[in-house]
Image (cartoon, rainbow, N blue to C red; front, side, top):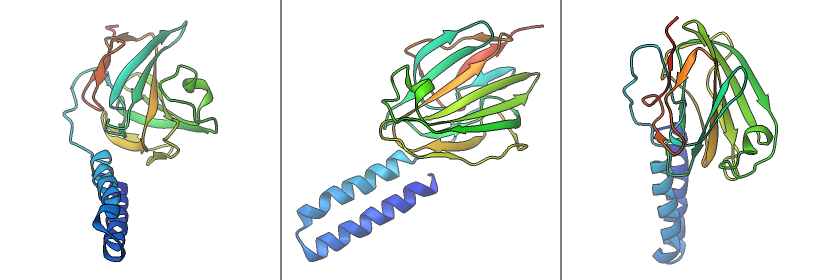
Length: 200
């Protein structure tokens, strides 16, 4: 479990106990329910990371769009409040850039969220490729957490941060990648393959 879940859970539980003591148990129930939800929301299960020249999903969620252009393909993943919100590195390599951009807090399932919402764009270079991914805040998610710094080396599928509550993650893959993800597919962070490297 992410440490934030423990803090939220303990705080809400303590609040519920105080309300229970000074009032009626029924009024404390919503706080206990919220505490249980926070413990569930901030879960961080172990994942089996696939071997080979593949890019894995940096987030749990539903693939809502796959948008190719001249140089890259953008895969957009929407995370609802029931998905695991821990983010992982899509490939192994070195973090060469972290670009935080202020923005709006539109509903993260909308296409416009990719360009208009608050986001953190991370570039990873490794395995002969450069992959970018964006942690995008949503209507409820207003806290993006990134635990790495420029120059850090990450393993494929390594935990790098999280986005609190509903949000979106975009992955940008170059022409050296063969996209295998499908729109509508539910992917798992660190274990679902989004793309495979083309043979040179």
